[in-house]
Length: 386
Ligand SMILES: *Cc1c(COP(=O)(O)O)cnc(C)c1O
Image 1 (cartoon, rainbow, N blue to C red):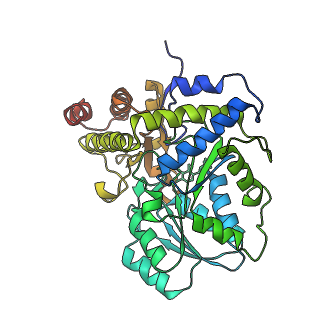
Image 2: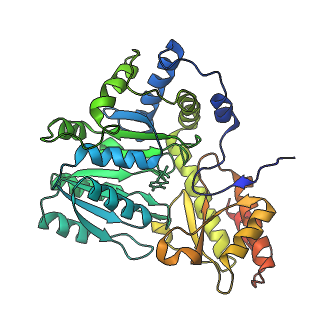
Protein backbone atom coordinates (compact mmCIF):
# COMPACT_ATOMS: atom_id res chain seq x y z
CA UNK A 1 0.00 0.00 0.00
CA UNK A 2 1.17 3.48 -0.83
CA UNK A 3 2.52 5.10 2.34
CA UNK A 4 2.42 8.68 1.14
CA UNK A 5 -0.64 10.85 0.94
CA UNK A 6 -1.94 12.38 -2.26
CA UNK A 7 -0.31 15.82 -2.51
CA UNK A 8 -2.82 18.29 -3.95
CA UNK A 9 -1.38 21.65 -2.87
CA UNK A 10 -0.35 24.42 -5.31
CA UNK A 11 3.24 23.12 -5.40
CA UNK A 12 5.07 20.95 -4.77
CA UNK A 13 2.74 18.57 -6.59
CA UNK A 14 2.65 14.86 -7.42
CA UNK A 15 5.57 14.09 -9.73
CA UNK A 16 5.82 11.51 -12.51
CA UNK A 17 7.76 8.39 -11.43
CA UNK A 18 10.10 8.82 -14.42
CA UNK A 19 10.96 12.34 -13.22
CA UNK A 20 11.70 11.06 -9.71
CA UNK A 21 13.79 8.21 -11.09
CA UNK A 22 15.84 10.70 -13.14
CA UNK A 23 16.63 12.52 -9.88
CA UNK A 24 18.20 9.33 -8.60
CA UNK A 25 20.51 8.72 -11.55
CA UNK A 26 24.25 8.86 -10.91
CA UNK A 27 25.42 12.45 -10.57
CA UNK A 28 27.78 13.29 -13.40
CA UNK A 29 30.21 16.16 -13.74
CA UNK A 30 28.52 19.42 -14.69
CA UNK A 31 30.84 19.51 -17.73
CA UNK A 32 30.35 15.86 -18.76
CA UNK A 33 29.14 15.54 -22.38
CA UNK A 34 25.86 13.86 -21.35
CA UNK A 35 25.05 16.67 -18.93
CA UNK A 36 25.93 19.39 -21.42
CA UNK A 37 23.46 17.70 -23.78
CA UNK A 38 20.80 17.59 -21.05
CA UNK A 39 21.29 21.27 -20.14
CA UNK A 40 21.18 22.28 -23.80
CA UNK A 41 17.99 20.29 -24.36
CA UNK A 42 16.33 21.94 -21.35
CA UNK A 43 17.11 25.43 -22.65
CA UNK A 44 15.66 24.51 -26.05
CA UNK A 45 12.55 22.90 -24.51
CA UNK A 46 11.94 26.02 -22.42
CA UNK A 47 11.84 28.21 -25.53
CA UNK A 48 9.20 25.88 -26.99
CA UNK A 49 7.03 25.80 -23.86
CA UNK A 50 7.29 29.57 -23.28
CA UNK A 51 6.67 30.09 -27.03
CA UNK A 52 9.70 32.34 -27.20
CA UNK A 53 11.91 31.02 -30.02
CA UNK A 54 14.14 34.10 -29.82
CA UNK A 55 14.15 34.39 -26.04
CA UNK A 56 17.12 33.89 -23.73
CA UNK A 57 16.42 31.11 -21.23
CA UNK A 58 18.08 30.87 -17.81
CA UNK A 59 18.12 27.86 -15.47
CA UNK A 60 19.35 28.72 -11.97
CA UNK A 61 19.44 26.87 -8.66
CA UNK A 62 16.88 28.37 -6.34
CA UNK A 63 13.13 28.60 -5.89
CA UNK A 64 10.64 30.66 -7.88
CA UNK A 65 11.43 33.67 -5.73
CA UNK A 66 14.99 33.66 -7.10
CA UNK A 67 13.52 34.09 -10.59
CA UNK A 68 11.58 37.14 -9.32
CA UNK A 69 14.81 38.48 -7.83
CA UNK A 70 16.76 37.89 -11.06
CA UNK A 71 14.14 39.72 -13.16
CA UNK A 72 14.10 42.78 -10.92
CA UNK A 73 17.81 42.89 -10.00
CA UNK A 74 18.84 42.94 -13.66
CA UNK A 75 16.26 45.38 -14.99
CA UNK A 76 15.86 47.91 -12.20
CA UNK A 77 18.27 50.71 -11.34
CA UNK A 78 17.83 52.84 -8.25
CA UNK A 79 15.06 55.40 -8.72
CA UNK A 80 13.36 53.66 -11.68
CA UNK A 81 9.56 53.75 -11.67
CA UNK A 82 7.85 50.36 -11.49
CA UNK A 83 4.17 49.50 -11.63
CA UNK A 84 2.96 46.41 -9.75
CA UNK A 85 -0.42 44.96 -10.70
CA UNK A 86 -1.34 42.85 -7.70
CA UNK A 87 -3.99 40.17 -7.38
CA UNK A 88 -2.76 38.79 -4.05
CA UNK A 89 0.19 37.66 -1.95
CA UNK A 90 2.73 37.42 -4.79
CA UNK A 91 2.04 40.97 -5.96
CA UNK A 92 3.15 42.08 -2.48
CA UNK A 93 6.35 40.07 -2.96
CA UNK A 94 7.10 41.92 -6.23
CA UNK A 95 6.68 45.20 -4.34
CA UNK A 96 9.13 44.04 -1.63
CA UNK A 97 11.77 42.95 -4.16
CA UNK A 98 11.39 46.17 -6.17
CA UNK A 99 11.78 48.21 -2.99
CA UNK A 100 14.85 46.17 -2.12
CA UNK A 101 16.54 47.28 -5.39
CA UNK A 102 15.56 50.94 -4.93
CA UNK A 103 12.64 51.21 -7.38
CA UNK A 104 9.88 53.78 -7.00
CA UNK A 105 6.90 51.47 -6.72
CA UNK A 106 3.29 52.22 -7.64
CA UNK A 107 1.13 49.42 -6.27
CA UNK A 108 -2.21 48.76 -7.97
CA UNK A 109 -4.17 46.28 -5.94
CA UNK A 110 -7.26 44.54 -7.31
CA UNK A 111 -10.29 44.02 -5.13
CA UNK A 112 -10.36 40.50 -3.70
CA UNK A 113 -11.01 37.86 -6.33
CA UNK A 114 -10.79 40.12 -9.38
CA UNK A 115 -8.26 41.86 -11.64
CA UNK A 116 -7.29 45.51 -12.00
CA UNK A 117 -9.11 46.99 -15.03
CA UNK A 118 -7.20 47.77 -18.23
CA UNK A 119 -8.55 51.32 -18.13
CA UNK A 120 -6.98 51.92 -14.75
CA UNK A 121 -3.70 50.35 -15.88
CA UNK A 122 -3.55 52.50 -19.02
CA UNK A 123 -4.35 55.65 -17.04
CA UNK A 124 -1.46 54.87 -14.71
CA UNK A 125 0.96 54.13 -17.57
CA UNK A 126 0.03 57.52 -19.09
CA UNK A 127 0.51 59.36 -15.82
CA UNK A 128 4.13 58.43 -15.19
CA UNK A 129 7.26 57.34 -17.01
CA UNK A 130 7.55 53.67 -16.01
CA UNK A 131 10.52 51.37 -16.58
CA UNK A 132 8.60 48.18 -16.00
CA UNK A 133 5.26 46.69 -15.09
CA UNK A 134 4.83 43.42 -13.20
CA UNK A 135 1.86 41.07 -13.10
CA UNK A 136 1.16 37.72 -11.49
CA UNK A 137 -0.37 35.39 -14.07
CA UNK A 138 -2.00 33.20 -11.44
CA UNK A 139 -1.79 34.46 -7.89
CA UNK A 140 -1.49 31.32 -5.82
CA UNK A 141 -3.07 32.98 -2.79
CA UNK A 142 -6.37 33.72 -4.54
CA UNK A 143 -6.53 31.48 -7.61
CA UNK A 144 -7.17 34.58 -9.74
CA UNK A 145 -5.83 34.59 -13.29
CA UNK A 146 -4.81 37.80 -15.05
CA UNK A 147 -4.88 38.04 -18.86
CA UNK A 148 -1.30 39.11 -19.62
CA UNK A 149 -1.78 39.80 -23.33
CA UNK A 150 -3.58 43.18 -23.23
CA UNK A 151 -1.35 44.37 -20.39
CA UNK A 152 1.77 43.44 -22.36
CA UNK A 153 0.30 45.34 -25.33
CA UNK A 154 -0.24 48.42 -23.20
CA UNK A 155 3.30 48.10 -21.86
CA UNK A 156 4.65 48.05 -25.41
CA UNK A 157 2.51 51.06 -26.36
CA UNK A 158 4.06 53.09 -23.52
CA UNK A 159 7.55 51.60 -23.98
CA UNK A 160 7.53 49.85 -20.62
CA UNK A 161 9.07 46.42 -19.94
CA UNK A 162 6.59 43.72 -18.96
CA UNK A 163 7.42 41.06 -16.36
CA UNK A 164 5.13 38.07 -15.86
CA UNK A 165 5.29 35.91 -12.74
CA UNK A 166 4.35 32.57 -14.26
CA UNK A 167 5.35 30.44 -11.29
CA UNK A 168 1.85 29.03 -10.97
CA UNK A 169 1.00 29.17 -14.68
CA UNK A 170 3.78 28.09 -17.05
CA UNK A 171 2.68 24.78 -18.67
CA UNK A 172 -0.79 25.08 -17.11
CA UNK A 173 -2.15 28.28 -18.71
CA UNK A 174 -1.90 29.74 -22.21
CA UNK A 175 1.35 31.67 -22.61
CA UNK A 176 2.69 33.10 -25.87
CA UNK A 177 5.67 35.08 -24.63
CA UNK A 178 6.92 36.33 -27.99
CA UNK A 179 3.56 36.94 -29.69
CA UNK A 180 2.29 38.81 -26.67
CA UNK A 181 5.53 40.78 -26.32
CA UNK A 182 6.27 39.82 -22.70
CA UNK A 183 9.84 40.74 -21.74
CA UNK A 184 10.26 38.28 -18.89
CA UNK A 185 8.32 35.13 -18.04
CA UNK A 186 9.54 32.90 -15.20
CA UNK A 187 8.56 29.93 -13.08
CA UNK A 188 9.82 27.48 -10.47
CA UNK A 189 10.03 23.75 -11.11
CA UNK A 190 7.69 22.46 -8.40
CA UNK A 191 4.48 23.81 -9.91
CA UNK A 192 3.01 22.95 -13.32
CA UNK A 193 6.49 22.11 -14.69
CA UNK A 194 6.39 18.98 -12.54
CA UNK A 195 9.89 18.69 -11.03
CA UNK A 196 10.81 18.73 -7.31
CA UNK A 197 11.55 22.23 -5.92
CA UNK A 198 14.94 23.79 -6.53
CA UNK A 199 15.18 25.40 -9.98
CA UNK A 200 14.27 28.90 -11.10
CA UNK A 201 13.45 29.05 -14.84
CA UNK A 202 13.29 32.36 -16.70
CA UNK A 203 13.10 33.48 -20.32
CA UNK A 204 14.11 37.05 -21.22
CA UNK A 205 13.33 38.93 -24.44
CA UNK A 206 15.99 40.63 -26.56
CA UNK A 207 14.73 43.97 -25.25
CA UNK A 208 15.16 42.85 -21.64
CA UNK A 209 18.75 41.74 -22.31
CA UNK A 210 19.44 45.05 -24.12
CA UNK A 211 18.01 47.03 -21.22
CA UNK A 212 20.30 45.15 -18.87
CA UNK A 213 23.39 45.62 -21.06
CA UNK A 214 22.70 49.37 -21.29
CA UNK A 215 22.55 49.84 -17.51
CA UNK A 216 24.34 52.87 -16.11
CA UNK A 217 24.92 51.27 -12.71
CA UNK A 218 26.03 47.74 -11.74
CA UNK A 219 23.49 45.07 -10.78
CA UNK A 220 23.06 45.18 -7.01
CA UNK A 221 23.19 41.40 -6.53
CA UNK A 222 26.16 39.13 -7.11
CA UNK A 223 24.39 35.78 -7.59
CA UNK A 224 21.50 37.12 -9.70
CA UNK A 225 23.60 39.23 -12.11
CA UNK A 226 23.16 38.12 -15.72
CA UNK A 227 26.83 39.04 -16.23
CA UNK A 228 27.67 35.80 -14.43
CA UNK A 229 24.99 33.59 -15.97
CA UNK A 230 24.45 34.74 -19.57
CA UNK A 231 27.80 33.32 -20.81
CA UNK A 232 27.01 30.03 -19.05
CA UNK A 233 23.59 29.70 -20.68
CA UNK A 234 25.05 30.61 -24.08
CA UNK A 235 27.82 28.04 -23.65
CA UNK A 236 25.45 25.21 -22.66
CA UNK A 237 23.05 26.11 -25.47
CA UNK A 238 25.97 25.77 -27.90
CA UNK A 239 26.97 22.49 -26.20
CA UNK A 240 30.18 23.84 -24.71
CA UNK A 241 31.37 23.30 -21.13
CA UNK A 242 31.39 26.32 -18.86
CA UNK A 243 31.35 27.17 -15.18
CA UNK A 244 30.22 29.91 -12.87
CA UNK A 245 28.33 28.12 -10.08
CA UNK A 246 27.75 24.37 -10.05
CA UNK A 247 24.36 23.61 -11.63
CA UNK A 248 21.94 21.26 -9.83
CA UNK A 249 22.88 18.31 -12.03
CA UNK A 250 20.23 15.84 -10.83
CA UNK A 251 17.40 18.38 -10.87
CA UNK A 252 18.31 19.49 -14.38
CA UNK A 253 18.29 15.88 -15.57
CA UNK A 254 14.80 15.51 -14.01
CA UNK A 255 13.79 18.77 -15.70
CA UNK A 256 14.79 17.35 -19.08
CA UNK A 257 12.50 14.35 -18.49
CA UNK A 258 9.55 16.47 -17.38
CA UNK A 259 9.83 19.10 -20.13
CA UNK A 260 9.97 16.23 -22.64
CA UNK A 261 6.75 14.76 -21.18
CA UNK A 262 5.06 18.16 -21.52
CA UNK A 263 6.22 18.62 -25.12
CA UNK A 264 5.29 15.05 -26.11
CA UNK A 265 1.77 15.65 -24.81
CA UNK A 266 1.81 19.08 -26.49
CA UNK A 267 1.68 22.32 -24.50
CA UNK A 268 -1.72 23.29 -25.89
CA UNK A 269 -3.24 19.88 -25.13
CA UNK A 270 -1.75 20.04 -21.66
CA UNK A 271 -3.23 23.48 -20.97
CA UNK A 272 -6.57 22.28 -22.27
CA UNK A 273 -6.47 19.33 -19.87
CA UNK A 274 -5.75 21.67 -16.96
CA UNK A 275 -8.69 23.83 -18.00
CA UNK A 276 -11.07 20.89 -18.18
CA UNK A 277 -10.13 19.57 -14.72
CA UNK A 278 -10.19 23.01 -13.11
CA UNK A 279 -13.62 23.82 -14.46
CA UNK A 280 -15.09 20.43 -13.53
CA UNK A 281 -13.56 20.56 -10.05
CA UNK A 282 -15.07 23.96 -9.31
CA UNK A 283 -18.50 23.04 -10.65
CA UNK A 284 -18.33 19.98 -8.42
CA UNK A 285 -17.54 21.78 -5.19
CA UNK A 286 -20.07 24.47 -6.05
CA UNK A 287 -22.68 21.70 -6.40
CA UNK A 288 -22.32 21.08 -2.64
CA UNK A 289 -22.65 24.78 -1.85
CA UNK A 290 -19.02 25.86 -1.52
CA UNK A 291 -17.86 29.22 -2.92
CA UNK A 292 -14.60 30.20 -4.59
CA UNK A 293 -12.56 33.40 -4.12
CA UNK A 294 -12.40 34.48 -7.81
CA UNK A 295 -15.51 36.54 -8.55
CA UNK A 296 -16.25 34.54 -11.70
CA UNK A 297 -15.08 31.41 -13.52
CA UNK A 298 -13.57 33.77 -16.12
CA UNK A 299 -10.92 34.98 -13.67
CA UNK A 300 -10.38 31.57 -12.03
CA UNK A 301 -7.14 29.74 -12.86
CA UNK A 302 -6.50 26.32 -14.40
CA UNK A 303 -3.82 25.42 -11.89
CA UNK A 304 -5.47 25.83 -8.49
CA UNK A 305 -8.75 26.68 -6.78
CA UNK A 306 -9.14 28.84 -3.68
CA UNK A 307 -12.34 27.91 -1.84
CA UNK A 308 -14.03 29.37 1.25
CA UNK A 309 -14.81 27.04 4.14
CA UNK A 310 -18.55 26.87 4.66
CA UNK A 311 -19.85 28.95 7.57
CA UNK A 312 -19.36 27.27 10.95
CA UNK A 313 -16.72 24.88 9.62
CA UNK A 314 -13.40 25.22 11.43
CA UNK A 315 -10.51 25.33 8.94
CA UNK A 316 -8.00 23.37 11.02
CA UNK A 317 -10.51 20.62 11.72
CA UNK A 318 -11.50 20.53 8.07
CA UNK A 319 -7.90 20.18 6.84
CA UNK A 320 -7.17 17.52 9.47
CA UNK A 321 -10.07 15.34 8.31
CA UNK A 322 -8.99 15.72 4.67
CA UNK A 323 -5.48 14.64 5.66
CA UNK A 324 -6.76 11.69 7.73
CA UNK A 325 -8.57 10.58 4.58
CA UNK A 326 -5.23 10.55 2.75
CA UNK A 327 -5.16 13.82 0.84
CA UNK A 328 -3.08 16.93 1.51
CA UNK A 329 -4.55 20.28 0.50
CA UNK A 330 -3.38 23.76 1.54
CA UNK A 331 -4.80 26.34 3.91
CA UNK A 332 -5.19 30.03 3.09
CA UNK A 333 -2.22 32.29 2.27
CA UNK A 334 -3.54 35.83 1.93
CA UNK A 335 -3.04 37.49 5.35
CA UNK A 336 -6.44 39.19 5.78
CA UNK A 337 -8.54 36.11 5.03
CA UNK A 338 -6.05 33.31 5.75
CA UNK A 339 -8.31 31.34 8.10
CA UNK A 340 -11.41 31.53 5.91
CA UNK A 341 -10.39 29.44 2.91
CA UNK A 342 -8.41 26.50 1.55
CA UNK A 343 -6.55 25.83 -1.70
CA UNK A 344 -6.41 22.80 -3.96
CA UNK A 345 -3.69 22.48 -6.60
CA UNK A 346 -4.73 20.69 -9.79
CA UNK A 347 -1.75 20.98 -12.10
CA UNK A 348 1.03 18.99 -13.73
CA UNK A 349 0.28 15.31 -14.22
CA UNK A 350 -3.04 15.61 -12.35
CA UNK A 351 -5.62 13.05 -13.48
CA UNK A 352 -9.26 12.07 -12.98
CA UNK A 353 -8.48 9.81 -10.00
CA UNK A 354 -6.67 12.64 -8.20
CA UNK A 355 -9.65 14.96 -8.55
CA UNK A 356 -12.10 12.25 -7.48
CA UNK A 357 -9.94 11.56 -4.40
CA UNK A 358 -9.86 15.25 -3.45
CA UNK A 359 -13.61 15.67 -3.87
CA UNK A 360 -14.22 12.54 -1.85
CA UNK A 361 -11.87 13.74 0.91
CA UNK A 362 -13.58 17.15 0.98
CA UNK A 363 -17.01 15.52 1.25
CA UNK A 364 -15.76 13.19 4.01
CA UNK A 365 -14.38 16.15 5.92
CA UNK A 366 -17.60 18.14 5.53
CA UNK A 367 -19.54 15.13 6.81
CA UNK A 368 -17.27 14.96 9.87
CA UNK A 369 -17.62 18.68 10.56
CA UNK A 370 -21.39 18.50 10.41
CA UNK A 371 -21.96 20.52 7.23
CA UNK A 372 -25.31 19.88 5.58
CA UNK A 373 -25.05 18.71 1.95
CA UNK A 374 -26.15 15.86 -0.31
CA UNK A 375 -23.56 13.15 0.10
CA UNK A 376 -21.93 12.14 -3.19
CA UNK A 377 -23.24 15.18 -5.07
CA UNK A 378 -19.81 16.62 -5.95
CA UNK A 379 -18.62 13.24 -7.25
CA UNK A 380 -21.77 12.87 -9.31
CA UNK A 381 -21.28 16.36 -10.77
CA UNK A 382 -17.66 15.61 -11.65
CA UNK A 383 -18.50 12.29 -13.29
CA UNK A 384 -21.11 13.98 -15.45
CA UNK A 385 -18.77 16.79 -16.52
CA UNK A 386 -15.60 14.90 -17.25
C1 LIG B 1 5.03 29.63 -5.57
C2 LIG B 1 5.01 30.99 -6.18
C3 LIG B 1 6.08 31.89 -6.05
C4 LIG B 1 7.25 31.62 -5.20
O1 LIG B 1 7.95 30.50 -5.57
P1 LIG B 1 8.89 29.76 -4.53
O2 LIG B 1 9.38 28.59 -5.31
O3 LIG B 1 8.03 29.38 -3.37
O4 LIG B 1 9.96 30.72 -4.15
C5 LIG B 1 5.98 33.10 -6.70
N1 LIG B 1 4.91 33.43 -7.43
C6 LIG B 1 3.87 32.59 -7.57
C7 LIG B 1 2.71 33.00 -8.40
C8 LIG B 1 3.89 31.34 -6.94
O5 LIG B 1 2.85 30.52 -7.08
